[in-house]
Length: 151
Length: 151
Image 1 (cartoon, each protein chain N blue to C red):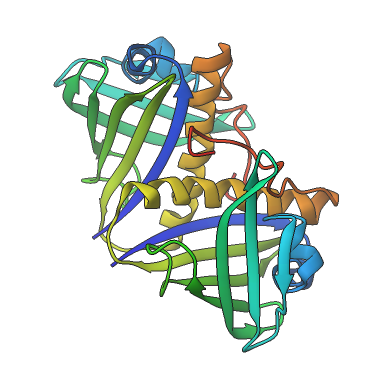
Image 2: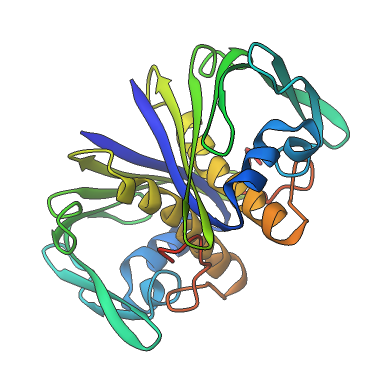
């Protein structure tokens, strides 16, 4: 098993970051503008991505755990084979003026090339989350920062 | 043991990317402007970082392996405890107009919070490398993109 880890600090309260990780409008403003579903425990969040106006796939996440301003856990229930069954943990803590986000996308079966790609892409989207909360403007798909031929 | 993985695609030849990973001037233009030493096999590269004009630490890397336009391997021989003994692998391959960089910072003893930070920061520096090779301008330290209270 292998994990993707990231840490960013967002000049904000953890309450604000938590909102951006749980409200549909928040998620749509930093990850992908095509976000549907319910951010409540047991709810299903559907993230879809497009390229050139065509939908190219996405992820369905079941919300496993929510602790306001502290923790969000998702399980991937549909999407690329490599993602299904993996979990995504968001742990938040306040350090002075920063809300620290500890991100873990855990339990990849193998460190395949797609995992390398997703690791970098998660960093890009975490910076989009940071930008959204700090400035009001993120860079969600389809206007996300492109990193390679895999977008 | 735990690894940091990343993948970026740089619109360029792998020869150009290889240069930016081996020539002192290249390294200084995307990672840290305070880069000293020799990028040859067996040579020692010294990367130093500063904040507010004061040097705050860095890494010494021994060059273990070089395959032009294909592979660069470093071993960390001095720096933060968590880094010493780890290895950094750069694998390059050409896919059409992109040079694909597969990056692995391997053999972290524990997935400590500093590893989370370094994972995100490596993504930022890989984007700086991409920018340098594609546009001639990177964002090396001390002008690197800041991600948190840990810079």
